[in-house]
Image (cartoon, rainbow, N blue to C red; front, top):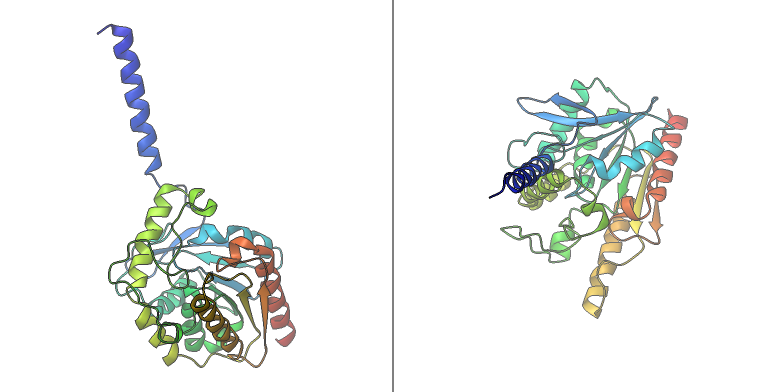
Length: 297
């Protein structure tokens, strides 16, 4: 083989190896990692002021999915978004991955990061479970809440949703994350995508347990609450599907009753992922709750 040809092949082979290695490396850590008891959780905070907004993402999402909303709300106050264990730049955490454990992790995280409260809690989908348990356990620290098409603790029984024993990236949008070739998924770093899949699988295995914990810790403080519900159906195409969508909306309205200082708004052009489809709606709701909490305090 000619020397020039061999050199060219070696160059190509080296380039492929380097690109492959780069694709499997973690992107730079945007925030800070805090030890919460033998494992670390990543959190990024921006802005200044009180109350501090704390955002908990839905299944399959990490902190990067909320950066736009964080940047826009950080103009008004301090906003922190974190990666639950297994997601983003956080270490894997102990099992089971249920809402009670996650609530305790949020408490340790805010302590280590020296964020004493008060908090405005924002939870999307499964994140709604986690912040509700946290609020019930820390009522004196909570200034307000925003639930973004959040899960309801009775949705699995009422809608007869069967959770898979072995998650295979397929399932109902109301309980399982999206892993198809959507723009948001394709734009995410490969390592973060794979970590999100495995982390979601661990949380899905404990969803029934998490729902029971939300029922147990259901007494949240009487603070300003905005429930944002989707305006575009996720279930459609048949009478049965439309019926299930109506039940979901009834459950969303039920969440509105969690606080006497509440309102329900609809993101007319969004499906379940309101934070990606209409981030402005979420930003406005967070700012409204922050403003209301300041007046009340």
